[in-house]
View 1: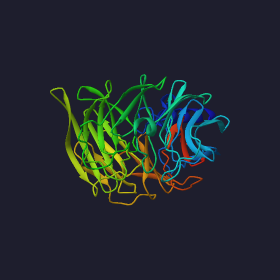
View 2: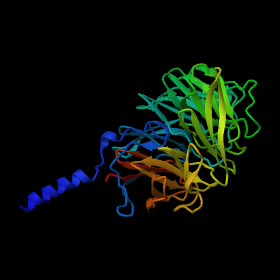
View 3: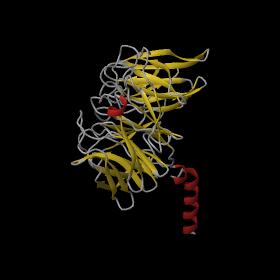
View 4: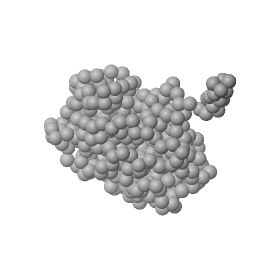
Length: 428
């Protein structure tokens, strides 16, 4: 009888408590996930870290020096890192917990502020695409690491080296690779992903991009946008937001007010014909509306939030429902929730977070994970009515600035910390 009651109890429990399922937990093939929006499809994860702490499954090393995040397809994890003999792409085998291969793409360590890699590799079929921090763009075989082709943004497209290096993770769209150069010769660069040959570039021409900012690629990555009846590529460059015709490379529109002269970093958030963007360094945030006026795309400012209200230094922003969640204040991650269509602050921005410094943000299963520069992680409910903290996690290892964005795949949380990689179990 006891065993029967136990079986019934377990059945009832399985009906009322959602279990983690691998079916909804996709690979993470590029920067900020499958849709480049910082969202994981994982469900059934640990929902309260105060009640149950994620368990460290293992920690390994061999990734090199850098702040790049990781991409994961199957049992292969990819990232970039600095080594004594240069900057390299690394493939890490999740089964053996060892480096499967390392391919150097520079002969020496690139020199710029905060030495280290930035690029999260983009996986496309059997290929892997990267932008190294000194401007090398390359295609590699993801199983062997063999280089199919490589080009350089500085040498070939007139790009100037940003103060903290090139930080883009290349966009693959069909047969195209798209990334930013930010130069008068090429604001954006589009290459044939298989051959590396130029399809088009976006010259600045006579366009008046505005006085704010400077002529460089910026630190964001390019996004696909279908707005105002036109497929386009959107990127935050040194002079602010730009939209480029996906077919021709023609500059469609630009928006300068959100730029600053130091560093434009966060990826914008796209929702239909609307784009939300923010930068730090006491700049602010804005929502622009793209309109088709007689066949010409115009970017109309809906509102602008000053730096005291909202500014995302780096770490990114995530839209859940009608709301933007992020960290605000320069070099800080004060949690904040803003209604995207109105700019109204729902909560936050005025109380100190659990950790220190800017926060890289990730969404999964109804919650947000804030990874602070100090290493501490906070689990926060994606709730627009109030701030609900659901526990914190202090990782096993912390070094320098914990800027690498967290990743969730197969119910596991991956944290890159310079040369080391930590894997935590989030399965509920």
